[in-house]
Image (spheres, rainbow, N blue to C red):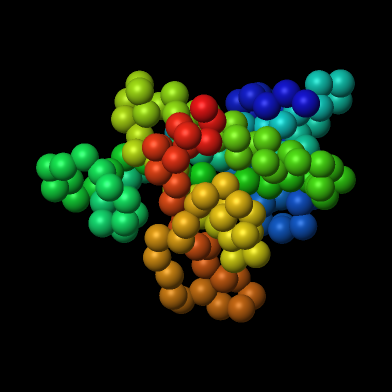
Length: 172
């Protein structure tokens, strides 16, 4: 399985992760958000034989309030710190349970580590769906705040944080 940036010729139709909004994003919006609007970059786990996307994540540059992390950061009173934001991460139901989600998240963490030396990145923030919080906690992510206003039909994502120091230790 090859994890790389999304290409126009990748087969995005038929992807089904169990959450329709993530399926629709990949099929209809990922490519244009990446190439036309420059809102984020989508990386796909692509079956090399069929070019079918079987898992993906979308990342973008972002910043968060420095006091939201409860992590020791550089002195200087910076009101915001640069982070890599994981906006989406999904695995097709046909390949769930084989560790692909973990592989995708490790790819995100490697990118964050590279960017921390290239442009500055204090850590990773993920917008976790409530049912995915446990998955991210396994990697050391911690909630950074509770958002209100989501309904039962569409609960708001829970922002979670992992500092670059923790990523360095985890990846060696």
